[in-house]
Image (tube, rainbow, N blue to C red; front, side, top):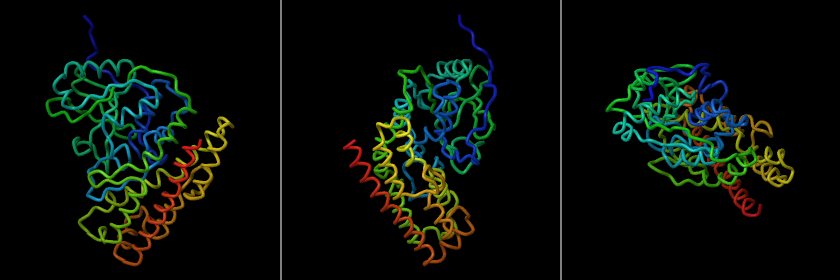
Length: 350
């Protein structure tokens, strides 16, 4: 009969979700953390994975009050289908188990948690900060199980930096668990970049769902709400309903547009993709040709519509100033439409 430890904890836990590095999207850093433990691919850093997940590709915006989920594509699309896409691109098997099934088959999944940790592999968790009382943040969807006690009944959730909390898996369980399996196939960095670029139009044209918008539609809905005076309402939390979307924009920066040039650097046969990237950069400029701060973020900060909520509060009470902010967002949406047309045309040709 096989016996498992009563308790175990992964050693050498690195900081998770380091804001000073711009790691503001949950899923990419969780997967990067896991891939480091698997020695999966030396190039699978936060930014590469965030392009796979769509998080740095498409802006998001929620017309309704925040749900507390991550303010990015992988927060809005959280669930089996999105997770399956990500691990398929990476070439790994996985098992996605919903919270209700874990309650029903608790013994099985407590054992699987223990087995994964004993092998040195964290377990990916999809939940919501509102369902985990000890999770203090402005938003949250993904965390990691990095340890367990009592044979797996109590798990150690890594929330941010190296901060962990205890969570008991009982009849009130709210955690969906994703167990990472074996590698199905070798995936090169070139393969990843090609899939990322081919998927960009998909992320940018996702239809709205439950008041949540993507891509150019997100910028336009955001602009409409600004001009209509949504953010004059003092009962509405400004940071969690406005600031997080500036943070989304700031985190993405110019990241997705320079993947084209990265592919061209790997293989000169893709030089035309590099030219496509340069054309997109002209429409969606950033501080440098290889990323940096997007010009739109810089512009919003200059207009009092950035991440300083005191400035935003004053701007939103001034009809002319807030109309200027809305106009900047609409102009960017128009540029994004043009970039999408270039992508779709060249992707068909290339």
